[in-house]
Length: 284
Image 1 (tube, rainbow, N blue to C red):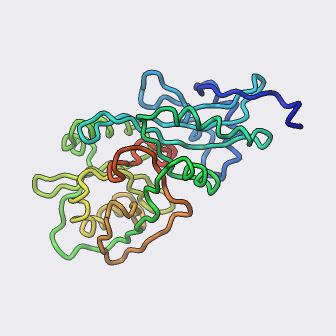
Image 2 (image 1 turned 120 degrees about the vertical axis):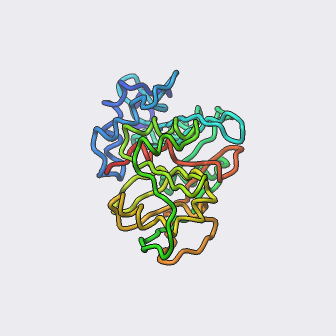
């Protein structure tokens, strides 16, 4: 089809009913482990949000030829209400690739919203970089289990007990993620607690949210053994910024093929992946 005879595509908000039209595009992405039911989560209002949308589509009126998903969340950051949107699954039919940026522009116009891209393709990474996105993480730390040599902090795994130990915002996150394939635990040391939100993939526990960063750094060496045992995994993986260079025996750095990115005015240490594709599309 030539550029002159193909139907014009326009951008509009994506609604739940668009999934059947978008799914053939999503199947082209390099994610064979995702079933149709898992992809459909992107088109489900998982958290009962008002004015919810799945993102934006390129629509010719005859069919949908492009999609860029957006997963929105709202939390209090530094005493201020902060809306974050995780961009995901940017896919456009080859005949309409020149219109790809049209899908991104509505997100960029939301100046107060922090945007994240955590699994960019090389092409998407370059586009985001040109548009002012900053690198959030370039490496993760893979941490292997090792029995502690001293008394360990308590790892709380019972859901009811975990929930009671959380602050209001963490409790909201905990409740929001109960239907998803995640592990939610607390490290407790005396009167301090650290909330962890973890998914399982390829025999690793991927840590996406760290409540008390200082407590996490103090105790991860001691709780990695029970964490791995509880999760049934052979190792843990956490973004290196949560460790800030802390040295750990039996661990190694892993470089991401493309850095995780974000755009917004908040510090990098205030960005987490709780409400992102890394969690929403996770499977046990």
